Image 1 (cartoon, rainbow, N blue to C red):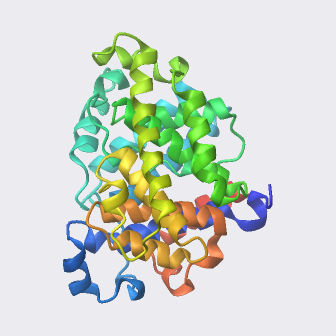
Image 2 (tube, rainbow, N blue to C red):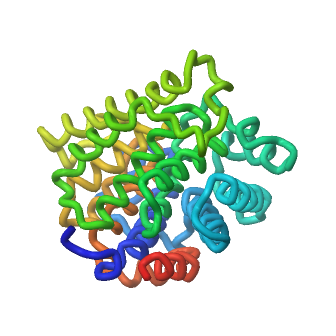
Length: 340
Protein backbone atom coordinates (compact mmCIF):
# COMPACT_ATOMS: atom_id res chain seq x y z
CA UNK A 1 0.00 0.00 0.00
CA UNK A 2 1.28 3.46 -0.85
CA UNK A 3 0.06 5.32 2.21
CA UNK A 4 -1.14 4.59 5.69
CA UNK A 5 -4.51 5.77 6.90
CA UNK A 6 -2.74 8.03 9.37
CA UNK A 7 -0.53 9.63 6.73
CA UNK A 8 -3.31 10.89 4.50
CA UNK A 9 -6.18 11.07 7.05
CA UNK A 10 -8.49 9.06 4.86
CA UNK A 11 -11.35 8.96 7.36
CA UNK A 12 -11.51 12.73 7.76
CA UNK A 13 -11.24 13.20 4.01
CA UNK A 14 -13.97 10.68 3.29
CA UNK A 15 -16.45 11.99 5.87
CA UNK A 16 -15.97 15.60 4.76
CA UNK A 17 -16.21 14.53 1.13
CA UNK A 18 -19.47 12.67 1.59
CA UNK A 19 -21.04 15.62 3.42
CA UNK A 20 -19.83 18.09 0.77
CA UNK A 21 -21.25 15.90 -1.99
CA UNK A 22 -24.48 15.50 -0.06
CA UNK A 23 -24.86 19.27 0.37
CA UNK A 24 -24.05 19.93 -3.29
CA UNK A 25 -26.67 17.41 -4.39
CA UNK A 26 -29.36 18.46 -1.88
CA UNK A 27 -30.81 21.28 -4.05
CA UNK A 28 -30.56 19.24 -7.28
CA UNK A 29 -31.90 15.85 -6.19
CA UNK A 30 -35.29 15.93 -7.91
CA UNK A 31 -34.30 17.94 -11.01
CA UNK A 32 -33.19 16.80 -14.44
CA UNK A 33 -29.89 18.09 -15.83
CA UNK A 34 -31.34 21.03 -17.84
CA UNK A 35 -33.21 22.23 -14.74
CA UNK A 36 -30.05 21.93 -12.64
CA UNK A 37 -28.01 23.92 -15.15
CA UNK A 38 -30.70 26.59 -15.25
CA UNK A 39 -30.50 26.82 -11.48
CA UNK A 40 -26.72 26.59 -10.91
CA UNK A 41 -25.08 27.62 -14.17
CA UNK A 42 -22.23 25.50 -15.62
CA UNK A 43 -21.86 22.35 -13.57
CA UNK A 44 -18.06 22.61 -13.41
CA UNK A 45 -18.46 25.87 -11.49
CA UNK A 46 -21.17 24.67 -9.11
CA UNK A 47 -20.80 26.24 -5.68
CA UNK A 48 -21.61 24.80 -2.27
CA UNK A 49 -24.94 26.30 -1.11
CA UNK A 50 -25.02 28.83 1.71
CA UNK A 51 -25.82 27.59 4.28
CA UNK A 52 -24.36 24.18 3.44
CA UNK A 53 -27.13 21.93 4.70
CA UNK A 54 -26.85 18.16 4.27
CA UNK A 55 -29.56 15.51 3.95
CA UNK A 56 -30.48 12.33 5.77
CA UNK A 57 -27.51 10.70 3.98
CA UNK A 58 -24.99 12.49 6.20
CA UNK A 59 -27.24 12.33 9.24
CA UNK A 60 -27.53 8.54 8.99
CA UNK A 61 -23.80 8.20 8.32
CA UNK A 62 -23.19 10.00 11.61
CA UNK A 63 -25.78 7.81 13.34
CA UNK A 64 -23.97 4.71 12.10
CA UNK A 65 -20.62 6.20 13.09
CA UNK A 66 -21.77 6.94 16.63
CA UNK A 67 -23.34 3.50 16.91
CA UNK A 68 -20.09 1.86 15.82
CA UNK A 69 -18.08 3.89 18.29
CA UNK A 70 -20.44 2.91 21.10
CA UNK A 71 -20.40 -0.76 20.10
CA UNK A 72 -16.60 -0.89 19.84
CA UNK A 73 -16.19 0.79 23.23
CA UNK A 74 -17.61 -2.47 24.63
CA UNK A 75 -14.99 -4.67 22.98
CA UNK A 76 -14.46 -6.30 19.58
CA UNK A 77 -17.27 -5.56 17.14
CA UNK A 78 -19.90 -8.29 17.28
CA UNK A 79 -23.41 -8.63 15.83
CA UNK A 80 -25.29 -8.17 19.10
CA UNK A 81 -23.45 -5.05 20.24
CA UNK A 82 -23.59 -3.51 16.76
CA UNK A 83 -27.30 -4.17 16.37
CA UNK A 84 -28.19 -2.70 19.75
CA UNK A 85 -26.06 0.41 19.37
CA UNK A 86 -26.94 1.23 15.76
CA UNK A 87 -30.60 0.43 16.27
CA UNK A 88 -30.66 2.97 19.11
CA UNK A 89 -28.98 5.62 16.93
CA UNK A 90 -31.26 5.01 13.95
CA UNK A 91 -34.40 5.28 16.08
CA UNK A 92 -33.08 8.48 17.69
CA UNK A 93 -32.38 9.90 14.21
CA UNK A 94 -35.89 9.00 13.04
CA UNK A 95 -37.42 10.93 15.97
CA UNK A 96 -35.09 13.93 15.82
CA UNK A 97 -36.52 17.32 14.84
CA UNK A 98 -33.55 17.60 12.47
CA UNK A 99 -34.91 14.64 10.51
CA UNK A 100 -36.64 17.00 8.08
CA UNK A 101 -34.55 16.46 4.93
CA UNK A 102 -36.95 14.30 2.88
CA UNK A 103 -35.82 11.01 4.49
CA UNK A 104 -36.58 7.76 2.71
CA UNK A 105 -39.83 6.05 3.54
CA UNK A 106 -38.14 2.67 3.93
CA UNK A 107 -35.89 4.01 6.70
CA UNK A 108 -38.80 5.64 8.52
CA UNK A 109 -41.01 2.55 8.38
CA UNK A 110 -38.19 0.28 9.52
CA UNK A 111 -37.26 2.65 12.36
CA UNK A 112 -40.85 2.56 13.62
CA UNK A 113 -40.53 -1.22 13.93
CA UNK A 114 -37.02 -0.98 15.41
CA UNK A 115 -38.37 1.34 18.10
CA UNK A 116 -40.40 -1.58 19.52
CA UNK A 117 -37.74 -3.38 21.53
CA UNK A 118 -39.45 -6.77 21.42
CA UNK A 119 -39.27 -6.80 17.62
CA UNK A 120 -36.26 -8.70 16.27
CA UNK A 121 -34.42 -6.46 13.85
CA UNK A 122 -35.10 -8.91 11.03
CA UNK A 123 -38.82 -8.28 11.51
CA UNK A 124 -38.25 -4.54 11.06
CA UNK A 125 -36.18 -4.98 7.91
CA UNK A 126 -37.99 -4.11 4.69
CA UNK A 127 -37.14 -7.30 2.82
CA UNK A 128 -38.13 -6.07 -0.64
CA UNK A 129 -36.31 -2.74 -0.48
CA UNK A 130 -32.91 -2.13 -2.02
CA UNK A 131 -33.02 1.67 -1.85
CA UNK A 132 -29.75 3.58 -1.68
CA UNK A 133 -30.46 4.40 1.97
CA UNK A 134 -28.76 1.08 2.67
CA UNK A 135 -25.33 2.13 1.42
CA UNK A 136 -25.22 5.93 1.29
CA UNK A 137 -24.43 5.74 5.04
CA UNK A 138 -21.98 2.82 5.12
CA UNK A 139 -18.68 4.74 4.72
CA UNK A 140 -17.65 4.45 8.40
CA UNK A 141 -17.23 0.71 7.99
CA UNK A 142 -14.65 1.29 5.28
CA UNK A 143 -12.75 3.75 7.45
CA UNK A 144 -12.41 2.02 10.82
CA UNK A 145 -9.07 0.27 10.97
CA UNK A 146 -9.16 -2.59 13.50
CA UNK A 147 -11.76 -4.84 11.84
CA UNK A 148 -11.31 -8.21 10.20
CA UNK A 149 -12.69 -8.75 6.70
CA UNK A 150 -15.47 -10.84 8.21
CA UNK A 151 -16.39 -8.13 10.72
CA UNK A 152 -16.39 -5.41 8.06
CA UNK A 153 -18.52 -7.38 5.59
CA UNK A 154 -20.93 -8.70 8.20
CA UNK A 155 -21.37 -5.32 9.86
CA UNK A 156 -21.87 -3.56 6.51
CA UNK A 157 -24.61 -6.01 5.60
CA UNK A 158 -26.25 -5.93 9.03
CA UNK A 159 -26.43 -2.15 9.19
CA UNK A 160 -28.07 -2.20 5.76
CA UNK A 161 -30.45 -4.94 6.82
CA UNK A 162 -31.74 -2.96 9.79
CA UNK A 163 -33.78 -1.01 7.27
CA UNK A 164 -33.29 -2.49 3.77
CA UNK A 165 -33.48 -6.29 3.67
CA UNK A 166 -33.20 -6.95 -0.07
CA UNK A 167 -30.05 -8.99 -0.85
CA UNK A 168 -28.82 -6.32 -3.28
CA UNK A 169 -28.98 -3.74 -0.50
CA UNK A 170 -26.78 -6.00 1.63
CA UNK A 171 -24.29 -6.78 -1.15
CA UNK A 172 -24.07 -3.16 -2.35
CA UNK A 173 -23.40 -1.97 1.19
CA UNK A 174 -20.65 -4.55 1.63
CA UNK A 175 -19.16 -3.61 -1.75
CA UNK A 176 -19.32 0.13 -0.99
CA UNK A 177 -17.54 -0.31 2.35
CA UNK A 178 -14.92 -2.54 0.70
CA UNK A 179 -14.27 0.04 -2.03
CA UNK A 180 -13.77 2.79 0.55
CA UNK A 181 -11.47 0.53 2.55
CA UNK A 182 -9.31 -0.23 -0.48
CA UNK A 183 -9.04 3.45 -1.39
CA UNK A 184 -8.20 4.39 2.20
CA UNK A 185 -5.42 1.80 2.16
CA UNK A 186 -3.90 3.35 -0.96
CA UNK A 187 -5.02 0.93 -3.67
CA UNK A 188 -4.51 2.29 -7.19
CA UNK A 189 -7.97 3.49 -8.31
CA UNK A 190 -7.50 2.22 -11.87
CA UNK A 191 -7.39 -1.33 -10.46
CA UNK A 192 -10.44 -0.78 -8.28
CA UNK A 193 -13.19 -2.15 -10.54
CA UNK A 194 -11.27 -5.37 -11.12
CA UNK A 195 -10.64 -5.81 -7.41
CA UNK A 196 -14.30 -5.20 -6.64
CA UNK A 197 -15.38 -7.75 -9.25
CA UNK A 198 -13.08 -10.33 -7.66
CA UNK A 199 -14.48 -9.53 -4.23
CA UNK A 200 -18.05 -9.91 -5.49
CA UNK A 201 -17.29 -13.29 -7.08
CA UNK A 202 -15.53 -14.52 -3.93
CA UNK A 203 -18.49 -13.58 -1.76
CA UNK A 204 -21.30 -14.39 -4.18
CA UNK A 205 -22.66 -17.37 -2.25
CA UNK A 206 -21.50 -16.43 1.25
CA UNK A 207 -24.34 -15.70 3.63
CA UNK A 208 -23.12 -14.15 6.90
CA UNK A 209 -25.31 -16.14 9.27
CA UNK A 210 -23.53 -14.83 12.38
CA UNK A 211 -24.48 -11.27 11.42
CA UNK A 212 -27.74 -11.70 9.53
CA UNK A 213 -29.38 -14.56 11.44
CA UNK A 214 -32.55 -15.75 9.73
CA UNK A 215 -33.10 -12.65 7.59
CA UNK A 216 -33.14 -14.70 4.39
CA UNK A 217 -36.20 -16.66 5.57
CA UNK A 218 -38.31 -13.50 5.30
CA UNK A 219 -37.81 -13.68 1.52
CA UNK A 220 -39.15 -16.22 -0.98
CA UNK A 221 -35.72 -17.73 -1.65
CA UNK A 222 -35.16 -21.49 -1.27
CA UNK A 223 -31.85 -21.06 0.59
CA UNK A 224 -29.61 -18.47 2.18
CA UNK A 225 -27.07 -18.91 -0.60
CA UNK A 226 -29.69 -18.31 -3.29
CA UNK A 227 -30.87 -15.22 -1.42
CA UNK A 228 -27.48 -13.52 -1.16
CA UNK A 229 -26.29 -14.52 -4.63
CA UNK A 230 -29.17 -12.54 -6.15
CA UNK A 231 -27.73 -9.41 -4.58
CA UNK A 232 -24.15 -10.02 -5.68
CA UNK A 233 -25.27 -10.79 -9.24
CA UNK A 234 -26.99 -7.40 -9.47
CA UNK A 235 -23.86 -5.72 -8.12
CA UNK A 236 -21.72 -7.52 -10.70
CA UNK A 237 -24.04 -6.23 -13.42
CA UNK A 238 -23.59 -2.71 -12.01
CA UNK A 239 -19.80 -3.10 -12.08
CA UNK A 240 -20.04 -4.23 -15.70
CA UNK A 241 -21.82 -0.97 -16.52
CA UNK A 242 -19.08 1.05 -14.78
CA UNK A 243 -16.44 -0.81 -16.73
CA UNK A 244 -18.29 -0.19 -20.00
CA UNK A 245 -18.65 3.52 -19.27
CA UNK A 246 -14.94 3.86 -18.52
CA UNK A 247 -13.97 2.25 -21.84
CA UNK A 248 -15.56 5.18 -23.67
CA UNK A 249 -15.62 8.01 -21.11
CA UNK A 250 -17.94 10.95 -21.71
CA UNK A 251 -17.48 13.46 -18.88
CA UNK A 252 -20.07 15.91 -20.23
CA UNK A 253 -22.81 13.26 -20.43
CA UNK A 254 -25.09 12.63 -17.46
CA UNK A 255 -23.48 9.61 -15.73
CA UNK A 256 -26.92 8.24 -14.84
CA UNK A 257 -27.39 7.33 -18.50
CA UNK A 258 -24.57 4.80 -18.18
CA UNK A 259 -24.96 3.39 -14.68
CA UNK A 260 -28.44 4.28 -13.45
CA UNK A 261 -30.19 7.02 -11.54
CA UNK A 262 -29.06 5.92 -8.10
CA UNK A 263 -32.38 5.53 -6.31
CA UNK A 264 -31.46 1.91 -5.65
CA UNK A 265 -28.34 0.72 -3.87
CA UNK A 266 -26.33 -0.86 -6.67
CA UNK A 267 -26.98 2.11 -8.98
CA UNK A 268 -25.99 4.70 -6.36
CA UNK A 269 -22.78 2.75 -5.80
CA UNK A 270 -22.06 2.39 -9.53
CA UNK A 271 -22.81 5.99 -10.51
CA UNK A 272 -20.95 7.41 -7.51
CA UNK A 273 -17.96 5.23 -8.37
CA UNK A 274 -18.12 6.24 -12.03
CA UNK A 275 -18.04 9.95 -11.17
CA UNK A 276 -15.02 9.40 -8.94
CA UNK A 277 -13.15 7.41 -11.60
CA UNK A 278 -13.98 9.84 -14.41
CA UNK A 279 -12.24 12.68 -12.56
CA UNK A 280 -9.54 10.91 -10.57
CA UNK A 281 -7.30 13.92 -10.18
CA UNK A 282 -10.15 16.39 -9.74
CA UNK A 283 -12.23 15.40 -6.71
CA UNK A 284 -14.13 18.69 -6.58
CA UNK A 285 -15.08 18.27 -10.24
CA UNK A 286 -16.13 14.69 -9.47
CA UNK A 287 -18.62 15.71 -6.77
CA UNK A 288 -19.91 18.55 -8.96
CA UNK A 289 -20.52 16.08 -11.79
CA UNK A 290 -22.28 13.73 -9.37
CA UNK A 291 -24.49 16.55 -8.09
CA UNK A 292 -25.44 17.49 -11.66
CA UNK A 293 -27.24 14.25 -12.53
CA UNK A 294 -30.82 13.35 -13.35
CA UNK A 295 -31.15 10.86 -10.51
CA UNK A 296 -30.67 10.78 -6.74
CA UNK A 297 -28.03 13.49 -6.92
CA UNK A 298 -27.35 13.89 -3.20
CA UNK A 299 -26.74 10.17 -2.62
CA UNK A 300 -24.65 9.81 -5.78
CA UNK A 301 -22.51 12.82 -4.84
CA UNK A 302 -22.32 11.65 -1.24
CA UNK A 303 -20.75 8.36 -2.37
CA UNK A 304 -18.49 10.09 -4.90
CA UNK A 305 -17.22 12.36 -2.12
CA UNK A 306 -16.67 9.40 0.19
CA UNK A 307 -14.59 7.59 -2.45
CA UNK A 308 -12.60 10.69 -3.39
CA UNK A 309 -11.94 11.72 0.21
CA UNK A 310 -10.79 8.23 1.17
CA UNK A 311 -8.34 8.27 -1.73
CA UNK A 312 -7.02 11.83 -1.46
CA UNK A 313 -7.50 12.84 2.19
CA UNK A 314 -9.12 16.04 3.48
CA UNK A 315 -6.70 18.49 1.87
CA UNK A 316 -8.44 18.23 -1.51
CA UNK A 317 -11.64 19.87 -0.28
CA UNK A 318 -11.78 23.69 -0.43
CA UNK A 319 -11.29 24.95 3.10
CA UNK A 320 -14.16 27.42 2.79
CA UNK A 321 -16.41 24.43 1.98
CA UNK A 322 -15.09 22.09 4.64
CA UNK A 323 -15.24 24.79 7.33
CA UNK A 324 -18.93 25.55 6.86
CA UNK A 325 -20.44 22.18 6.06
CA UNK A 326 -23.25 21.27 8.46
CA UNK A 327 -22.13 18.90 11.28
CA UNK A 328 -18.51 19.78 10.48
CA UNK A 329 -17.24 19.35 14.04
CA UNK A 330 -18.95 15.97 14.40
CA UNK A 331 -17.55 14.75 11.07
CA UNK A 332 -14.04 15.91 11.90
CA UNK A 333 -14.04 14.42 15.40
CA UNK A 334 -15.12 10.99 14.14
CA UNK A 335 -12.59 11.23 11.31
CA UNK A 336 -9.78 12.09 13.71
CA UNK A 337 -10.73 9.15 15.94
CA UNK A 338 -10.55 6.68 13.07
CA UNK A 339 -7.48 8.25 11.47
CA UNK A 340 -5.64 7.74 14.73
